[in-house]
Image (cartoon, rainbow, N blue to C red; front, side, top):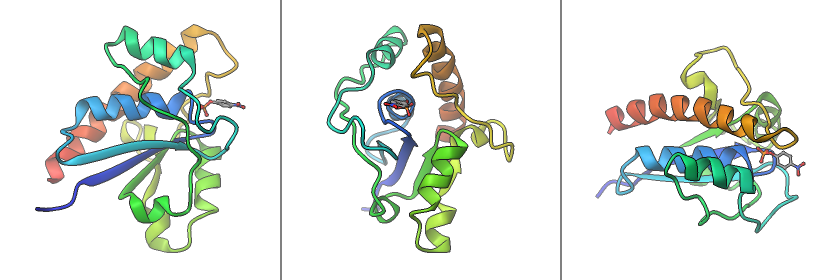
Length: 156
Ligand code: 4NP
């Protein structure tokens, strides 16, 4: 049996954007072929549930992300994952700073490059804003994960 393709979603806190990205992508892929996880470049919230506003917006769209717990990105993730998608350019710099080879660097890309190729657009951090920011982040991630899931499923 061949191994699962593994995808890691990364943001700063691992409580707002990347938990949504994890939940959304998981919902679009067959779990027998894919493993999806998320992590944060900072360790402020390790062990915590996703932000209540991410839990709420996911619920509104029929997804339950309350099984997730925050963890910090580790250089070992370069070995564990085939693809690493970051939410913004700051996450991109932080993750690349931990890479030890060209092969590891090649695994990393901004998630919105799935829908705006080569434009390096950020998923804005909704942490300090209101609930509307979370719906808008959900919509962007849903579109990007839809494109990504099609690409990954075609490659099987
Ligand atoms: P996230 O948002 O990177 O989308 O999870 C943040 C969550 C928490 C903090 C910053 C961003 N914080 O500073 O605690």
